Length: 595
Image 1 (tube, rainbow, N blue to C red):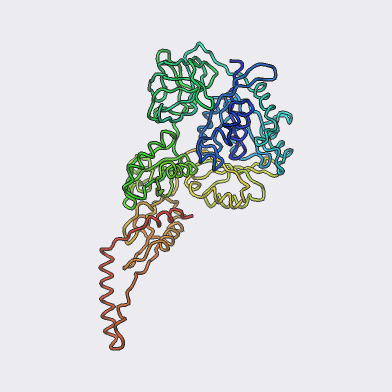
Image 2 (cartoon, rainbow, N blue to C red; image 1 turned 60 degrees about the vertical axis):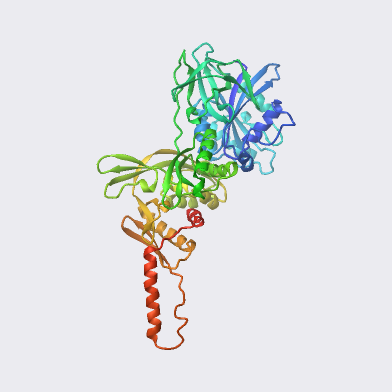
């Protein structure tokens, strides 16, 4: 065990985690030159195109140290985006050390700090690495000072590296051997292993990746998952190279995989503990079910594709257990699914994967969060869609989820950021100068306000010089109302939204205006209204397409024209009573891109 080192790579998005991992793979010859490609650990095309890691990846490297000893390195490359922070926290719990990467041209960003706190909470040995030092825009001294202020290390402890050119890779290897402690654990104790990831293989079922804290796992053992309370046989165990490498057994301190023929990804949960049926150990602290933060309806463009969409979502869920879905119907959009996502990036990725991997084009309704409604009778119910909200006569209060938002930026943009956050009902909690050129602003904000377009706005007002990170805190009482959109008096359920009372009029006006531009004109007049309960707060009117019925009257008495116009008016009135307003799919997609 003294020659095993378990470590993860943590950083903000785009600070070069995957590229640095590539160099480590090359340096230890885990991957041959012929097989080498950029972002070697990222499996999905999407990850390569966007340059982001969506799923954690684990791999074992064998390294011959300068002192002649051979070491086993278990490297876990983690996602950088805030949506996947639970996965990062479990990966960190499986390690003794962390490589903290900071981009020399960008400096410390919000996600760097939140991931660092996660690592410190787990008592990890932090190895600070200044990446991209070969770039012309690298601010080596300035960013080194930021790192020293942040983690209180010595200047000599910061390793200068470049994932692109391979500078400093030998120094990183030496630092991992010297600074990261060897794993502790008792190989003879009952088996206790932490699951930090799982993947789905179409032939073998769900494969769980784990780190053994105590005990030993042998091929053929009867194993038990503590939190899901299920038992299976360990059909195959082994370690993780570029491919799975089978072994007879894996003991304490090491990282490996287990295949147990599970076909349903929900039965394996990240953060769960594996033990043996005959000799059970206690569960490892820190497990929680991944809770979706953002909900949206996903509907097929053609209603005949409903079953195909169900199959596609089920297959996606096998690879991504944090996706949840249940069937729902909408009067406007037909049959579809109510899906829960970790955040907006997760929603975007699922939409993109449905389109690419399954050829499913879908309509996504306005994303919203879940609320709690307190009824006058004393009940407390969970509200996932605006249509679930009880009538105002039964309601006592509504609670919405709040988050702590940390924004790191240059001092020039403080005013613009404060204006944006105040507009979104944010409350400034603290303002800290990390350095003269970097300030951290902390706000309490409603999650619903950042779900939609907050990040895009933040990027545009700061010209990209702001990084953003958040975590949920609690539910707080708010003055929320359900805004319904009516077409000729009929509510369109897919366009309902829960909004703060102070913003409801402006929001209603905007949707009505947008619908007026998008809806095709009919033979009769269409009234577009925004309503809260029975009160109309905004209205737009689409006038009718009129045929010129007086064209055949040339000259003669005015009463002849009037008679024809009156006849037309009656016909329009009748048409309006029996006519239905069809909202085209294109209009839905455009309205939902409201911002």
